[in-house]
Image 1 (cartoon, rainbow, N blue to C red):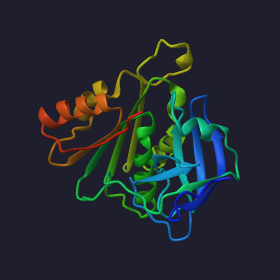
Image 2: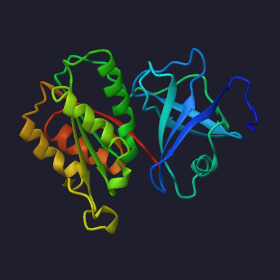
Image 3: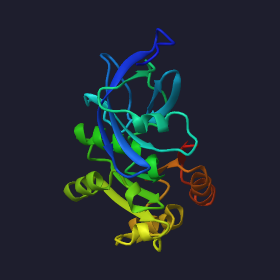
Length: 243
């Protein structure tokens, strides 16, 4: 049972839980009436007063809040979530927050670079703009992970990219191709911040028609800002995920 330590907190409950691996899961929680957010924002959930912010994968027009959660060593909330079940209650702060949004829709290309759970705001972008028929925008999503099991949205994004190739391109890459956990991997290899320059050249992206978003590992973001921002001149927006 949730202890309501703050009367202003909303109540939510788990409506679906999908274990992807020992360290990754998707969680769907109920969306309270009148709860609103913009694509790219995050919600703050809690259990017994322990709170954590998670980016929302859902589009705002969906009926629930979808989260992509990584089990953090020595974390406070994620180990609790791992033991929870459908129907269990949690708290939700009444306002979604975050400025990692698409506010300028005048670019032709949106180069969205991320690592692991940094994919979440991009999933929300894709779902929202697809639902609203904004096909004049092109999303180039490059996701890096150590292990193939960390690509929690690859099937969805590859399906959309196949059906709407002028709207979405999705390129996942792993940094540890020799690891036994990746023995079935047949896709791109190399760190995402390393392969991105070749991708830019291949797709002929330039600073006039492209804006860059970087989300996830702070070291990756620093490298992207240095390579693409300072050295080339791309506008780079960032969202750092600290463990």
